[in-house]
Length: 49
Image 1: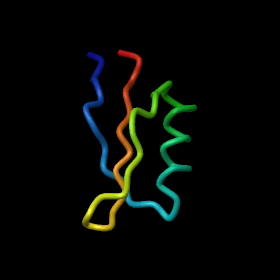
Image 2: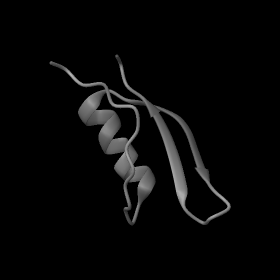
Image 3: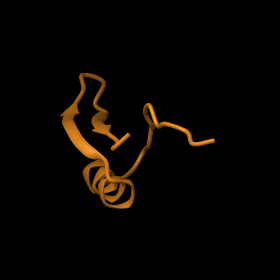
Image 4: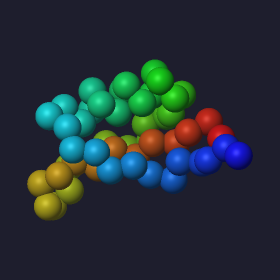
């Protein structure tokens, strides 16, 4: 039974580079990339399914 990815939460020294890895590995599309008021970075991706 396949699973759909709704979201993932990662902590990484370079969040954008990590998001790019998911783009290449799983075919995600980056929809937004923003630094939030909490100081963390939120990268929203969309998978092919």
